Amino acid sequence: MSTTQDVLARDEVRWLDADQQVHWRAFLTGSAIVTAALSAQLEADSGLSLSEYEVLVRLSETSDHTLRMSQLADGLVHSRSRLTHTVSRMERRGLVERQACEGDGRGVNCHMTDKGFQALVEAAPGHVMAVRRVLVDVLSEEQFAALGEAMAIVTERFRD
Image 1 (cartoon, rainbow, N blue to C red):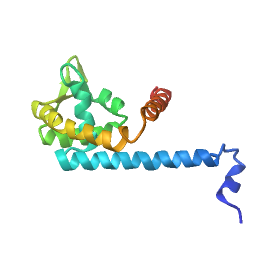
Image 2 (cartoon, one colour):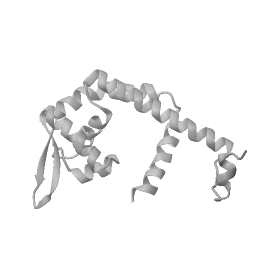
Image 3 (cartoon, rainbow, N blue to C red):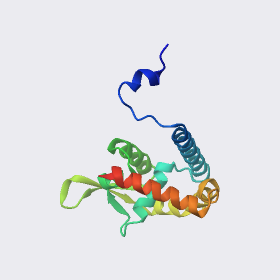
């Protein structure tokens, strides 16, 4: 009986070696744990999802708390439809509002409201403490820097 690798080996796949397989699975498991822990903390403490929190963070980093929806989707690496659903939920709660882009009738901006800014201000301390507890303080400074550098390379490679 042939294994999947035996059958697929004919396609000249560069299979992961044993060490690479261990690292790949550790990445998958670790990133799932980090995401789940941060999501649970935000939901419990602020009622925000991790995606909603990230939308508010991105909007807070602009001078007028406004970004074009397409820019926001690209920055968050979300599909347009996923972002639309997230923003719709946030809009119903008064955290953001959509506005037509000036000078471009096809474009739509997402603007963080005062209520959204207040929600971010209230959620941020607990979220940062959770990020530290779950990831930053678990790793050495060198490991955390290496993780950030590695993910920056991945981002740069696939961003364009």
